[in-house]
Length: 104
Image (tube, rainbow, N blue to C red; front, side, top):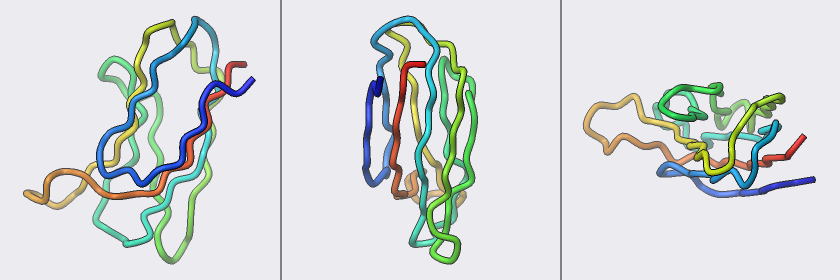
């Protein structure tokens, strides 16, 4: 079943606390409609990227992503964030993220 669905503008990091041990699928769409200078969207667990996604732009539109088979433990926190590539601008880029996390 679906564990969590989130749609938001992402100017800061977003965290998901894993409810139970298992294997999960993380999917969604990502867009940077203002074409702000952005790095990748980082999906991290314990300071290591699970995977990264290049944001869509005003020209390309939202980019879909999916990562299946992600083994997680109850209480783990998965972080989602998209840092800026411009020095001194606060470090974050506002992106639109639609996120679905499903227990497999």
